[in-house]
Amino acid sequence: MERIILHKDQVLFTEGDAPTVAYLIESGEIEITTSRAGERLVLSTLISGDLLGEMAVIDDAPRTATAIALSDCVLFQIDRTQISERLAGTDPIIRALLEGQLKRYRGALAAMQGKEIHKNDTDTASEKLGIGKIRLESQLREALNTGGLDVRYQPLLHVQSNKVAGYEALVRWNHPERGPISPVEFVALAEETSLIVPVGEYVFDTACAAVKTFIEHGADPKPFIAVNVSARQLSHPGLIERIVARVDAAGLPKGSLKVEITESQALNYEMVEKVISLCHNHGIKVALDDFGTGYSHLTHLHKLAFDTMKVDQAFTRSMLEHPRSMAMVKAIVAMAKAIDADIVVEGIETEAMLQALRDLGCDYAQGYLIGKPQTLEELLG
Ligand code: C2E
Ligand code: CA
Ligand code: CA
Image 1 (cartoon, rainbow, N blue to C red):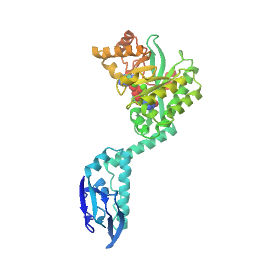
Image 2: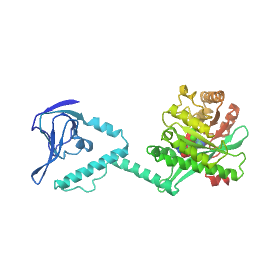
Image 3: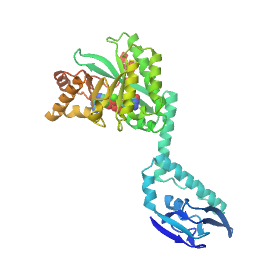
Image 4: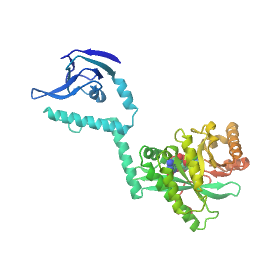
């Protein structure tokens, strides 16, 4: 950062100048002025610790005011990349909020200066992105309240008995314009705010009701339903406690509800440990999802008393072509057995894959061969 000395009455920049840098006042006072009908108008007086000139740098527009030193000043010059790189790395919604505020401020200033106001300046690309995201979030909130979310159930085959033992609940959003949106997209969006809390509760409530419906229809064996929760979701205070309370209130047979912890980001192992023990106290089994793909550091896994390991379809896909893949699946199965965990292999699409699982002694198979995610009505036939 370059240090600048400004003497009393010296002008730092003038209204209409091109924006090059912003400044941080180290010492001294600076007056920001504009003119209205030839009259000089003081907008503010800035002191040590204040930023100035950042506005024009943010939106790359000419300076809207003049800055003059009221006393001798020391300033630090802030390069525009210091600002633009930070802005680029921030949430598009924050950028849209900032740009919206700037636009409004410029409008108010222009009105005060008696200048023509440019109505409806077109939105910048980043503003559009941020606003698109806010819109999607509002639509998701609405969908939650108006039945626009939906849960599909994908069967898990018990390999030994060749019977469907349970289902994985997979949430869907039937978007009015875009059609069904993958949870990969909107779960991440919901996770950014507390919106994930009601989404999670909706999935759990729906899954609990589905367990009851299966039992009422005489499903044999009585199936379990596994519900996904992301590690990020679990870090919302009180979320898992509320979920467990709802499962208790549903009064399901023990073991009929499972939780799959997906590892969308680095697992907070201590938190996951607590979640597992809370679930166990309430008869809920816990699976570690997408094993071997994300952040399941082996050094931490010994501390986590999960009941099931789910092998990601990334392994399964290449299992039959590549002996090394097959060897890895074999080793993962052996590891699961050694720590007394069940094993589910995902992405089973062919009879040959299923046969391979039989040969490996896997507990459960999941994939399009067994069944695609379906609605409850479809499954009850
Ligand atoms: P996941 O838990 O690994 O779920 C399995 C995904 O693989 C599902 O995608 C499923 O439709 C797909 N799949 C299943 N069998 C096959 C197969 O044989 N071949 C192929 N190619 N794909 C198969 P989906 O439903 O789009 O879900 C994506 C992810 O979204 C899930 O991955 C899970 O991490 C997350 N998710 C789904 N529902 C929820 C939820 O209610 N809450 C949270 N937090 N996350 C959820
Ligand atoms: Ca899952
Ligand atoms: Ca998975």
